[in-house]
Length: 329
Image: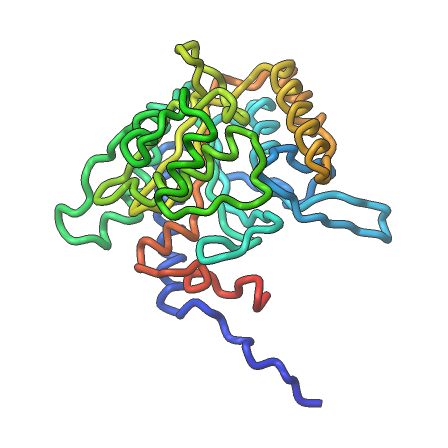
């Protein structure tokens, strides 16, 4: 019987696939020059992430009696390697996130993640800038790649939305969004960080990195995730995000090494997910055991490689830069 499938071809052109390969070679050369070891960790895990902003894709092997998740990031096993004495490491891998599909999202995508011992977020921002410059500057006109800008989260929000992220109320954010033509989702609720995320994604982020890479740092302590806190007033997370041409490319932390504090954060995530009626993955006890054994002082960052390729070739959709997106997988 003849197949009825019509859309079997890749959505990315062969030229784009060659560009992907060349950019991956640039990345590997960047890390080799800095003596950063390439590693591989499992894509399958018995523990999911508790982060309230992510949903894991479920995986199972019924014949083996095994149930788990596809990795949203290689972060947890990479930290176990760091605690075991690996030294500086990086990984290029496919990761998976349920519910993420659109112009900039595919449920399976490529991430470059790396960790540098003894780095703070300033040194790590330098490293990210060097890598992105190596990958993207050659394709731009002479003089078009300029030194990166660094903005605090508070200043970025003020400059591009008029909102004080640490002082203004949800009602103020709702008013500003309405005035800018943004209709909040009906199920957004009254959690302050959800409103800040909406302002950042709709009003602020698209304005960042126009003409030069932009790093946003000093996020609210409530958005620290796995980052350390800085004793500022108000307290802020030792975390940054990188934007170019309005596209978020990377998310970096000076990593939390305290297992007690990490458990508290994981349990708070679980409580928030439970209250929202969402699946509550088990805490990754192997990660916490690694932290107890001793995670070295380090900073780490995850870079969305497909988005880098999009910027390198001027693509408008992620489907243009991956061979087989979810609709053709």
